Image 1 (tube, protein in one colour):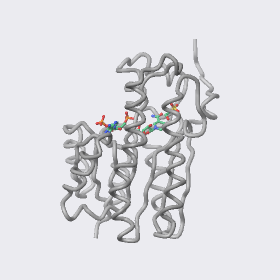
Image 2 (cartoon, protein in one colour; image 1 turned 30 degrees about the vertical axis):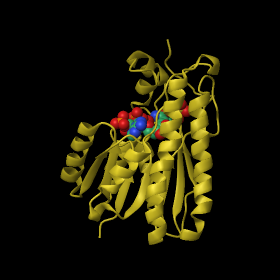
Image 3 (tube, protein in one colour; image 1 turned 180 degrees about the vertical axis):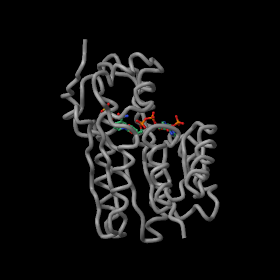
Image 4 (cartoon, protein in one colour; image 1 turned 135 degrees about the vertical axis):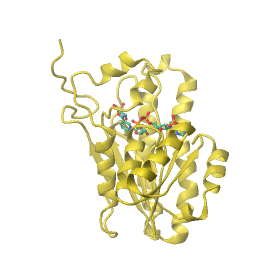
Length: 255
Ligand code: NDP
Ligand code: 8X3
């Protein structure tokens, strides 16, 4: 029987790459996000490229009722989710706290923290009932290293770090694996979203650096998931060679 993976935030970046990498390994994928047309196209591509079945669910993780309705609508053959990849999330803005936009704070906290909780609450319940499963949370180096002008995003990823450790403990008696993946700089739509579509400002983030790609993070996820059932990979921190941590990045060829 096919194994089912649910990947939130699969319309771009790390989530999309993860859906592809898992399907290449034979997983059936449930891909989610708000952009329905992208999901429809991704589902068709996954099915064509990897000879698997895929399901697309368009919903906003910030809305608990939408999470419940969308996940409750899954066809029977997709219901036994074996792997949950909590990836949906975003950063908005980069400014000192006293100049920050509270609406952006709310969106970050509601997506990165509350959205992750809503989806996990629903999926983990089924995993516990079946006595098996694996939850992979996409944290960040920002989850332990708060950086200048990023306090609220970093706080949201600190929450993901704490929640990952808490889930690991709570799910211990049920044999459910929990992994936190904590990347540094990954070139995706992340910076375009953070800077409201300002492509020049987004490109500046990666200037003089070869960043990670979504595929690099996906590969780490596939590796963690592929370990023997008695092995839990608690956390993976991965950064570009040119980025030691949130504070030190070596940029070359800068004129
Ligand atoms: P992208 O912007 O490329 O992808 C973000 C994904 O999250 C999209 O699929 C988006 O889908 C989804 N998403 C955002 N908000 C919501 C929402 N309210 N409801 C449902 N889906 C949502 O960025 P990344 O791939 O880089 O980001 C993925 C994760 O990786 C995030 O949690 C991010 O914090 C984390 N991360 C990123 C790093 C980086 O440098 N890029 C480094 C470390 C961690 P849609 O817009 O269709 O809803
Ligand atoms: C996202 C990447 O560089 O803002 O977590 O920490 S960064």
